[in-house]
Amino acid sequence: MKRSILAAALAAAVIGLSGCAGQAGAAAPAATASGGLTAITVGVSPSTASAAVYLAQQKEFAEQGLAVTTTTIQSGAEAIPQLLNGGLTFALGDAAGTITASSNDIGITATGVATVSPTDASKDYSAIMTANPAITSVAGLAGKTVAVNQLKGIAQLTAAAAIDKQGGDSSKVQFVELAFPQMVDALTSGKVDAALIVEPFLSAAKAKGLTTVIAPQSYSVPGLPSTIFVASTAYATANPDIVTRFNKAVGEAGARANADTDLARQIAGTYTTISPDVLKVITLPTYAESAGDTSGMRKLVDLMNTYKFLDNQPDYDTLLVSGN
Image (tube, rainbow, N blue to C red; front, side, top):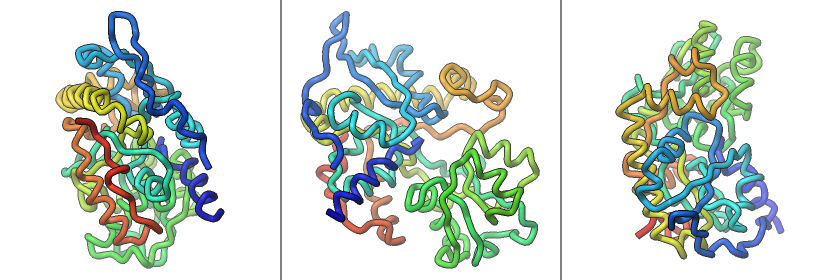
């Protein structure tokens, strides 16, 4: 009973925008669209992390024989049942949240990578920010409250690892959960001492004069999956060819986005609510060009174990099904 309650809670949090429904129909092949293309439905977030999916709709999906319909997903509570019952084929998800869910027997798998953490701090679309002038380095975060959007999610993992690698002590930090849109006000009002903020809220924080303590991703998880594509384990296992073709399409579109940030910003302007002025200045994610390479998830599992984020260990045969 305790385990099923935990599983239900994880299902509500796993999609990082990011006793569930049964898996009836989840393994069924996708329908055929007009022109002989395979019809699939992808759940995406209204954020720049989804740009490669929208770019791939221009040509790459059709080149791979796929007809893709996108639907906006606001929460895991909405996405997980649809993945499990076949209403969604793939959905954008949080890497750490998916690992946790899989380790607790929720029938989802990481099929591919959408964005990876940058290796260059100047390309980091996140930062630990503060309004407290006394905090000048990660060492100053000891005994302080640091807001993250989800406890034991990828943001807290990234923050903790970066703090420790730069000489701080994350065990002395009090992490608290707070939605991204509330973080700037929480910092300026003194409700929290620091916060890990992502774009487009990061640019707003900088405009208000808040100070960057550290751009954490390049220090903690460089090159590792940040947001991923998730499917039901049953579907991914039964349809490896579709998984492979989907990954090839979004990987090629991701390469276009990385090479032409103006193009990525333009496509983001068609589906996000980010204003054109903000889109011009925000730092974009690094899109995965080898979307089918999910090997970095194993390193994330190791890091999550280092910080004792997992009560149970995932089965890699069900956690990672990235095609054939």
